[in-house]
Length: 146
Image: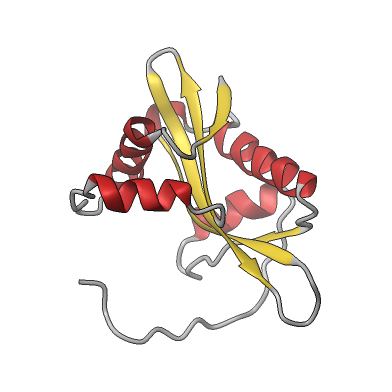
């Protein structure tokens, strides 16, 4: 298995990753037009990592780099992380987060975090198992996704 960061020129691979995320999360996926997708991949603040084996993408994550205002630094917010169920419990998710953290350190980004619904005990257990610490926080949402 290799871990690839997807960026400019990797639209086909990104479509494959986004389809996997939607399938694993059982979400309806809208078709992204080429200009939108290329703009996303051109944005250096957007991180998309794909775990790839011979048969294609078996897992991946997306994250956003957020600039801080208290100091000249950035943090990463992991937005989505999913592994094809056929590859669960094989270390794919942990390797994805490890690769993200390693690549982030190379850019002097020391902190990555992920919002997790309190009811999602599977995700909480996973993130704790790979060294994460749960923080008590409430996320307040305005509006609804269309």
